[in-house]
Image (cartoon, rainbow, N blue to C red; front, side, top):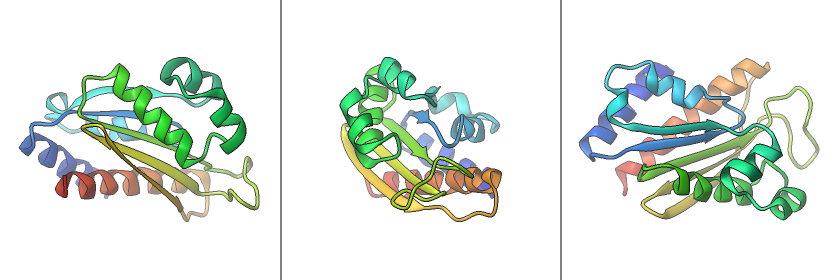
Length: 160
């Protein structure tokens, strides 16, 4: 399923002559991998970074340390700042940031396993999303996060 969605995204981006970049945590490079596995990816992918630790979010993407301390790594504010930092590093007009909790640990009552936040920056306009991804194990949650995020990007660029 991920392969079909990635193919569709590549077609949509080529049709719009757009480039995409990713800043990933929960997906650990899976978004970029899903795109890069498909011929023609070099036409649309510009940049990808995995920023798993808070330190890397601060150093690479210039996420505000106070944001991480007050809202945590899995928050709409954090992915918003990740998307801005990514925009400043990439040459893409679509910049996607994702953070989440794949489990089985690292969760809380307010942020359960599967909690995921995404920011999609299209030409400087950023929209953020939060949702709980279902899955019986870590790998399933990660794969579901990749699929959902790719679909969100497709939906976002269709209405851009």
